[in-house]
Amino acid sequence: MDDSLWTSSPILDRLRSQLGDLMAVERVEVRQGAEPAFAFYGRLYDDPDRAFERISERFAALGYTALLSRQKDLYQVIAVRGVVRAQAPRPWVNLILFLATLLTVMLAGAAPLPGGTFLSMLLSGLPFAAALMGILLAHELAHYFVARRYGSPVSLPYFVPMPFSILGTMGAIIFQRAPMRDRRSLFDIGIAGPLAGFIVAVPLLVLGLLFTRVGRPSDFLPPGEQTAVVFQEGNSLLYMAAKYLVFGRVLPDPKTGEDVWLSLPQSPGGPVVFAAWAGLLVTALNLLPIGQLDGGHVAYALLGRRAWKLAYLAIGLLGALGVYLWVMGNPAWPTWIIWAGLGLLFGPRHPPPLNDASRIGPGRTILGILMVIIWIVTFVPVPLVPVPAR
Image (tube, rainbow, N blue to C red; front, side):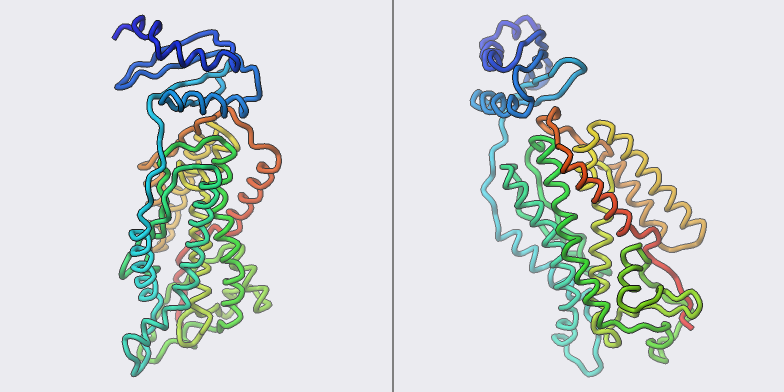
């Protein structure tokens, strides 16, 4: 297609006219595709954030979406045909998935009781399910409400049941139907979920530990179930500190092998502790600075395209950790290999927001550093630890 046909087109003239009082246009490019896009280069007369708001409104009225970025000494405004509109929600689908996930999580946390019925067994999984679903719900609703505050077209959370798994769920997802508006909204939406989940999980962790027993596995296993090795959850710095706060010593005890026991009926608070431990691990995984994970959102908001290098570094470190655990014979090694593979499969590079020239300010930078600290204290390098049962 001949670009000259577009450089004198009415729509190009109309788009350029909308920039007249906002930008000194020095150059125009036509980018070919199914629908041609128009790129305008020049200097803005106003603050980039204020200018983008006005450009975005004007272009939307013409049926175009505006993207703003900085290209060395000039700003670039791209007009892309089409505007994403909010879709009518179908909350009944979200409710059905939530109830199905609640059931599978209850089954995952249930403990068979001698002489008990199926209903009593199912209800024994309620503390675990309430704690884990509460953490996940806080995480997802924080994303949802912050996104709605920014006018971002997002769905309600879809919970994903996973029967016969250790947690009973694969978590929940929210569909983002349009690119993030700017770096501030990208940061706030990304950080809201992990922060809310963390705030809910920590008190549950401490509360559960108050009703949890400490000992060696042989102290709790029935005689008919004695085994040479059992697998226990690994420590994060936060988990180790919480156990020290409640019990006054480092667990597992390096001399006796004693640790908290999280199974019913010996430890009434054990399922809540395990749910909080899992919720905090999910928080750490979401904070990885990769692609469109929550940590990827935060990293791109803080660093821009420099975050892409950080994503590749994180994937490499995950792969190296997986290989190290494999060499050491730890059965948790596939965890990090899978996460490294998923990071590559779904893309390490976070897409830019519509307004990539926006600023986030020092307050969000400090909060971003706080989230790095939260990641450090919640990350579990060895999620599964084999320990002698006797």
